[in-house]
Length: 204
Image 1 (cartoon, rainbow, N blue to C red):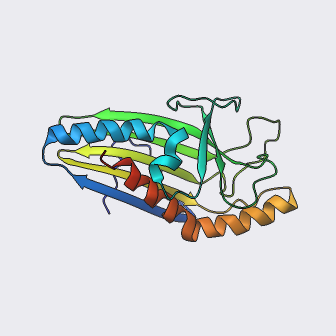
Image 2: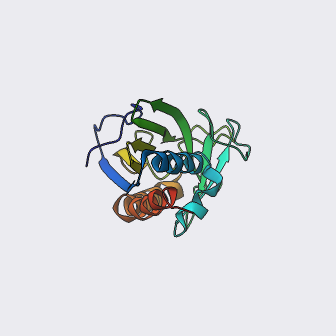
């Protein structure tokens, strides 16, 4: 699988698991591809509706600002997602898993247009606890990309350096992170991200 990393947001793979999920659509013309790319980009940056886009998604995502206050707009660097997944939530995350938007990048070339975001597990911005409130470790990243190459549009999610968060000082969270994280690496990410990449490129 050739990585769509035109924006350069996907980090190198050094440890843990590498999980790739992609979906591509070949359009009849570059103009049609432009239109689909524009729609897919808008969906990608509208985190609050990812669960609707994905349809069969297992999680609900809510965008917040840097203080953890819910917002209803396109994501920006420095924002957070609070994620509600099935089952018990993180105590340090007050019932949610949290990631921070590390990077939002876009590049456009004559026949290539790509936009990507990188998120990383983070502490809960709503409290003073520095502990990572996520079932994945702080070394893990998820990288979401939509790319147009000529008449082809591709939606991708590249998880890099993925491992469970075993650093929690809270016993309940440590057990929960190990259990949920292992399941996510094996099953959750594939199901969640497969539904998302298919939904991002759905034609209406």
